[in-house]
Length: 231
Image (cartoon, rainbow, N blue to C red; front, side, top):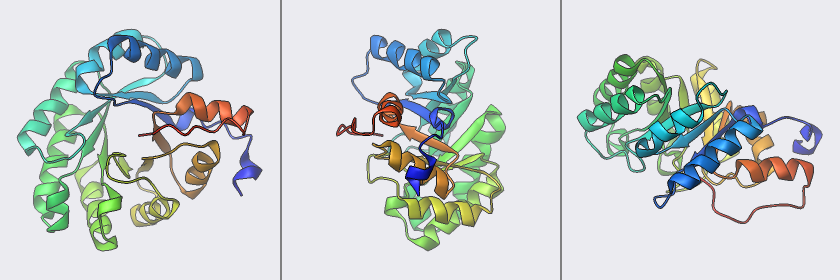
């Protein structure tokens, strides 16, 4: 099925991630340049790199996204709120917030809701809640979806990429569970153009990956597959 959609332009779906802990200012600049050149949806960087990315992409189309509570989600709600507010103050217009996985596993929906709703209300920016689907049961995924819908987040994001990769089945599940009310960001281990197409066809409206330029190259040359890791 993916081969039949080989002419699909995937660039507008891509959040171009640079989440390497050793990332340098030069690498941030290159990430932003690639996002502008290929017209990706955004660059996704750590809070420490938001200001540089905002300055580089001023008056350009790609948005600046920052991760919050990344990668474990195990910081306190107050710390996440501060981190989100600071990233927004520095110019990030999208925030990928890792949900508290422990709260999800123990069904603490009120705490989860308050954490996400406070970030949505305080920043007024696009919030993507990261579920870490690889670690959750179907019941826990459904709980996460329900909380996110009630809290006002704009996207469900499947994974950080640190604890397991995205699957087509998870994207389909989230799309059905959310009833098309919010976007779905597939993330974690997206390495090939064909995989990107399959995820989009399954319902993904964003793709989080550090391999954006390689995916575009594979569209032109299917033999140019990347074996490198991908967030």
